[in-house]
Image (cartoon, rainbow, N blue to C red; front, side, top):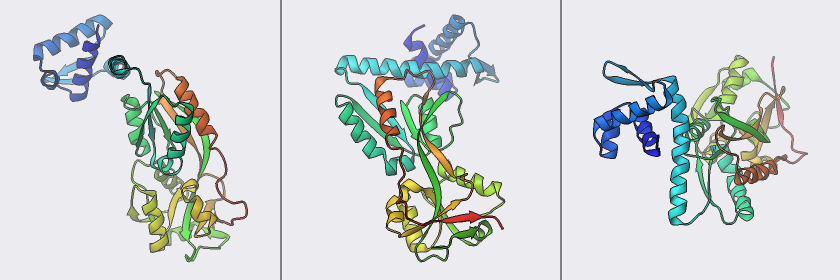
Length: 306
């Protein structure tokens, strides 16, 4: 079994067709078929079911695919480093919340501690970061959403709290107690589907039997804040993202009474990936950001049931 076997196997698994893999590598289809057969004989398992001239990856095939991607990725890094001069690289994925509030500072501190190491950062929602970690396109993720795949290890690194915000002229501003039923009369601007923030908030509202009206859906936190400021709507957002607006009292925050919207930001990596010194350094830097973001004397409202 060689790296070539794994590369061809990955192509077949991703396309579902031996002909597509053959075209990708400019080889014949019988060569691809023979490569898959050699892998199956080597491991003594069936990697694909052949039904009506179509390929369906088996559970054994799925297990091999997760390892194969990791091995091929490490091999490509080895080849690149040996031919171009060794420079270790850490590929960091972050959710929009993390990318908007702390990622730049985290990377700056990381470079101070690891000046000879290259970094690559990528920002998207939790679901996309999870997929890229599983496909070995990223080394580590920093997310606030729930990680669903058991092949990923999660390490809590800092506390975060989801709050509902309104502008200082909204009818809720200054109120100590707000009934959850009152939220149904308001318009919300929300993050997109796949966002950990949206998933947590919608789950909490659904659990309490509250239906909210979504008047806008955006991926950019700055656009959410502008909508709250200009359009007199509400938003559920990480407290870290509105730290400045809270402390200058441009925004008024509303929290749930039972702390159900509190969460942890997580450092995530694939279970079979070696926890390197660079990843340990990143983890320690992230832990140093675990602190309160609002001034102690800033008032906020509380959601109540009536």
